[in-house]
Length: 279
Image (cartoon, rainbow, N blue to C red):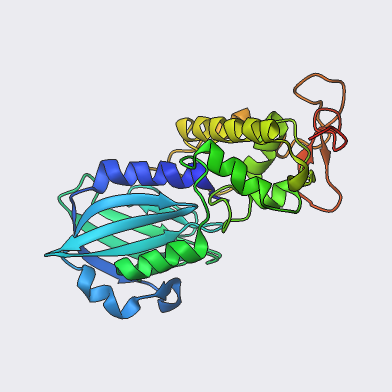
């Protein structure tokens, strides 16, 4: 469930609590949780956490030792969380990685991932560059508007799947795709190549507004998301259509929020998001 806003909340908390801390021990509970780089694990002992970044839905920890920098990439996937030691978990047996630190505000960081759709990767700079190129498209918070417009003008297919295509636009999942499209008054099945430039500009502005508002609210705690300190994201209280099937449209247009039959979790208003509107 964690998407871009949740991953950004995680990255910001890690920066606040752990930048400058030294990694003293890293325990791997099961080898298959590390996608690549497991033989390099011993290098990280004694390294200092100097940077934390977010790429799409992943959080990247940058460690430095002597003159070398290496990275630990945590994919949050559907159920992955990075948690401080004081944060309680329902099923502690699913804590697969424990990182112990000295010199930070928190003594331990845990990687909890019961369904293991995400993994961790231990990478050098070249490996991280390949990982980013292979997995991530443009970042919706930093891509310039003109580049976003050009990107969509050169794509085909339905709008919602494109927003969620991580190799095209990195970080947007089902929750925020639904919310963005409702606020932009665009049907999930609109054909991308039929959108006018002004419409794409509206979509861009709406996308940025929704994602930034969600980050300011700590993300959306739907099902199992918690920030590293255990707090729940409150943006779920601002959801207008996600999970609202059968409820009145919040725009008070008189219609009811529907769910697309072909996609079990696409929610939309048939009046405010008509698929017959001009592009």
